[in-house]
Image (cartoon, rainbow, N blue to C red):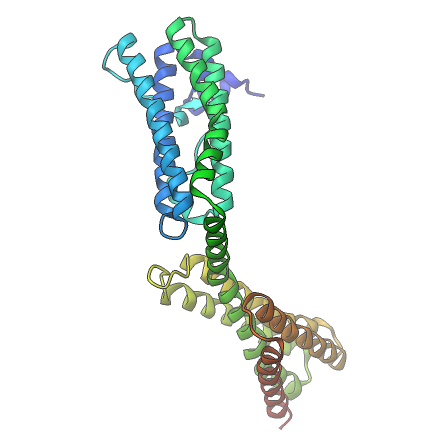
Length: 330
């Protein structure tokens, strides 16, 4: 088994324990710069929909920039103007940060959790660095920064209290719920309804025309997968979400495609049973629950009145099912 030293050599990384004080300061400066960039990216990502939270990250960015300037001052005084190029990914065991472009996939709560973890990691780094430093001025600075990083949760809370009053919290909660509905629920419901309803006719037409469960299963499988691919691509390419505010097209396409496929597979899988009438009975029962599931989702998440949703979904599904059975039995 490799030791930590051997593994670091294989990966081409420096060990933190081997860094001198100049390199530790250089690493701290680059880490503060990166964290400030991340907070700036968070702020820009949230500014339109969550302006109060964006203001919090603006404040966090200012804090990180202050730390960077203090580190630079001590570095220049102690080691001159040349800054050693050393980044966190070049040091074994040093916590890495997610690429900034990945923040598009993070929820508001997840961003806040990431922020808390970033501050904890920064505090631990400064504590370890201060313990290894023999220069009193550097040790003092690193110790002070460790204390300040530990206190950043308090700072973040103070910024939260300043920028997030009750009205702002309610507004952001409403915006977050709306974004969840537009990005996941609406495409998912559309896909589930399309998959559940549009595949009824070909599946049951095949079933009653052939009385062959295996043939029916193959037709249902192809119809479900094909519909899922079609719905997924259609949702992903017809709206990039920038003007409509519906969120990531990849997320919407994934939600629509997966739910479309599942909607069709629900009443396709029973035809793996060898008995035609047993498979058909089970499939019809599943169809009933599929349609009611759609009604429930529309009522809960889309605020559609239960009676209206029931009439729309059950009536439409029943008509498509009857058409498939009549055509297959003709």
